[in-house]
Image (cartoon, rainbow, N blue to C red; front, side, top):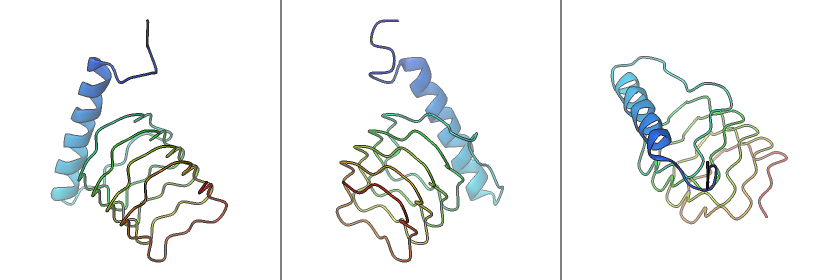
Length: 122
């Protein structure tokens, strides 16, 4: 498919939106819902989403818009966050061990007690 992987397709965007809604409903109702290991959310618009304590280990979040997202306590170990928009995101206590944050925008992000061991911050 021409352009596959470059931009999010409509069907992929629908799946991401459906998952985001399920995840949000689960969090709001106190359920523990986590995405599949290594989930691909490349270029996803997750602005303001509540992913507190989510397991996003090895997830592909390259180019994702996570502006103002709550990622406190989230496991983002080994995640690809290249070029992600993390402006004003709450990453307090997040596990970013070995994450790739190359060219990510962390302006105003809360990184209090976040684990950034072996993370790429170039």
